[in-house]
Length: 154
Image (cartoon, rainbow, N blue to C red; front, side):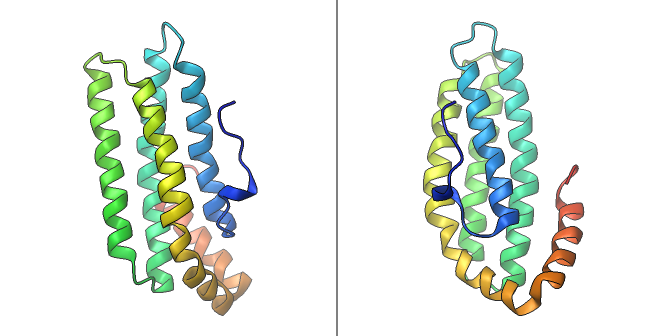
């Protein structure tokens, strides 16, 4: 296993931490595929899952930041768009027959460290203040509504 989920990756927002664990799972799946001679189908599946993950998670995360009134939402959204374009480029290269597993693995690891551990940390204070204000019940309702809105299989 390339990466083991640990407290250093946690933002302290359980629903987001759970979603971020998914990218660690994708990294570990891809790591197992890198040296496989017939990994094309497996890499295709990782890319498919990654596109689904980015659409769902980014939409959910941005809705949470918006609800909390996070001032850096526009810049954060721009970072998400850049990552989505990078994944799309990897997917096109893969579909053209290029071996992208190693490049994709490096991209995902960089994303985990740079974006989640550096940029996502910026919104946690404001989001946690909002969570404290609406309370546990309000948060549960908001999460349920937004999981259904952003995820195919919450």
